[in-house]
Image: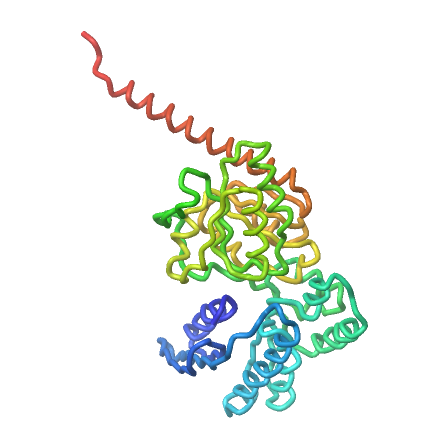
Length: 374
């Protein structure tokens, strides 16, 4: 299970702890697997992991075929279970287009459908292509009609709520339920070791997926400017995977900007990774505002470290960071490389002020502890 599955596990366990009987069905790259947990009060959590082969995310046709087959397998697992009749069926936006298949459970099993919109499809495809083709426009109209057939829609943020309202979804049909950090994070964890390429530098950490929805050019151009015209204190640590990682690495390498790339860490190592950041980097292209919400924001906020968001103010990422009081925050509009470089300089200056302040306090303590001369 990926990020969506991790959050589903957290919420399913919460439901089971209230005494409900919950069956969580998800995907795994390994073999089929089943597990069962019992809770006080009669609650039960049954987890079914269905084997699913990996696919090439860069090939649209391959991804579409995979989604159709996988969605059918998932919903068939629900329909063939006699317990699904009259039950609540909560599904997410992953895999893409699950909405079309989940409605079968409503029609065939008289289930109450709860749609947790993690991604908007086909709007995400339209944003990725940068144009609205006739087939996608027709698909979008059908999708909006089907969304109205769902009993409840859970949104991850206020930006998603506004999109649904603008699309004609009734306000009473929408519930805000945010994600949470996937593991406990106190903000006092021992930092993970710094990659050798970045020792002696401030760490700008990008963690997680770096895909089509994430801003690239502003980050690359801003880092180049930071090193050519600014202090050059920051290096980029990409603990990431995704279609945009290679582009970022190639551009920074060609410009001589220091960076390190590592594969995403296992979940139990995430708190230490986040603690290693001097500044967290979160990016989102303007066209994807509301369509997706980078879930890393919750772990970044819990870590207490400063955050640099390259994305529009309309995104709920900006709202969450503005509401938080535990960390410094800078927002930069996509395309504003100068603003990106300036933000890194402000973070650098703030860190230097902290060092000077700590040094002054140490000196004061040493003076106060000196014995009085006779």
